[in-house]
Image (tube, rainbow, N blue to C red; front, side, top):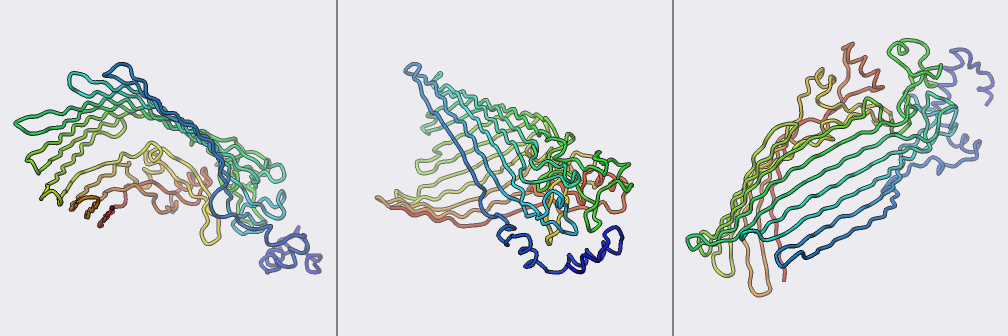
Length: 443
């Protein structure tokens, strides 16, 4: 206290002296002086607090001896609360709002999630075929709010609660499936044919302006012109303050999107008893996506009964997973912590100008090849299977490492506009293999 009385915080020398004093470990004395304990600064880790309500329905109504109307679905509401890292008042790379929270603060992220899904369909017999026509609609609504936080560039005028924006995602899927059993050349056949048409919609909603804006000393939004002036606010250690809500910045209007796509799928599946003890299954599926093209996959499987007790089986098939709309269009700047230091990392979509500057390619589908084989045994009430499998997935979509702007003036300007210190992208960058054995025995 004697040293503090001698400091003149209107001079650089006085400021530097106080900065050096703040590096000293005086926690015990400071806590006593503020009538606080270490418990007041604890993080909250573990599962988030969650409250939820769900309701579901399932019904079947016979229309006639050959037909049935069915429907099922549900509605759910979930509200969750999770905490971020504690914002301490004095941190060299921190944005804690010391004027509003002299002891720091622990921000809390609140989520509200609504899920709606319903299916309506008809099953009937049509010219010796089993026909199933159905339509499924589902929608997810995800809203975010931040409490007990602040926008440090607004100082004492900062709100402590922010509406951050949210997500909307919906799918509508129509299916037509046909199945028939018949004999041909004294062999039992099963054939299934089908088609599917799906429409998807993905939205990102922007938050309120104070949740994402960096303000200058005049409480005006920082622009490219402002960045080079002394109007930009700094913390006590001289580091420029980053605006937006602490813990989770709101979605900006430039993050907001409304994207659609559709895809058409056709499939065929044939299973036949080639011999009394040998069953063969062949299946194919064709998909065409409106946003990235077509793909074709297949499956070949067989089962051979050695005798009434033992059988062997094997299968080979290919697969794919198209990049989701979320992976293609998500854009956001988030706070991450490395070695107890806060950094602002921006995630850019692969079709963006930023991706082109870093030469990041567009996303492709993930592809898989699966091979499996095994033996089964069944006698009385004892059942046993042993299977080996090999699953190879190519071009898996993962989040890249962090890219810096380097010496590029264009990238430096983009990073400044985003309030970011690094850039990341979702990329097809990983191939994986899973090899294993699976044993099941039951009695």
